[in-house]
Length: 285
Image (cartoon, rainbow, N blue to C red; front, side, top):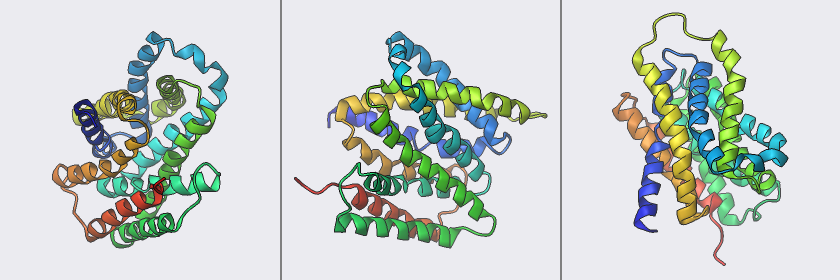
């Protein structure tokens, strides 16, 4: 990988490890709907002009229906579910559960006939990953937190299904324009809900700044860096990014928010990462 590739890779690893921290900060004083609306509206405001300037928007006309589906599956449901879950569980636990996305994606792709069959080693990876998730929730989750875990589970399903929609139904559409349009759709969808659930009292500045960081850095800038990295190293090597984001999120949760480094994290996290790697690796050709 070139020096530019390494810089982009490390930058995106940090950027996509940040959302869990800032979501946790924002939902203390703002409803998850307001946080999602602010995030997607800011990101759309920044990305749409870029897509328009590059002349990408007219190419989306044949794909409008599937862009709506993608916007719901990849953004509308996961963003809200993750925000709601972080009102009940730590940002570290949420990040580590989301780290199971490659495992779920591997199963979905196999069931839909989009990927190689599950070889013995990949099945072992799935079992190890599931065991890791079991340690995380079994040792760290109590009582009403199970609903939050279920919400993160829906987030994982959305994050796993979104790329499948892109790779099967939006192949010819420019990716940046798809993302920008999906963000705009979500801003429109969430506007009435965010208005109803808007804060009625003073909100600390840190909550609003958290929303700004989520929209500008963790969404708009993240996607620009993402597409630059794909151009630099290709989509296959991009999958490694999945294994670093949770580590960044856990570090920030422990250091910045004072979240505990639990036994579930120490045992479950390595198992989830190992399982994800084994479940998604392809046999040598």
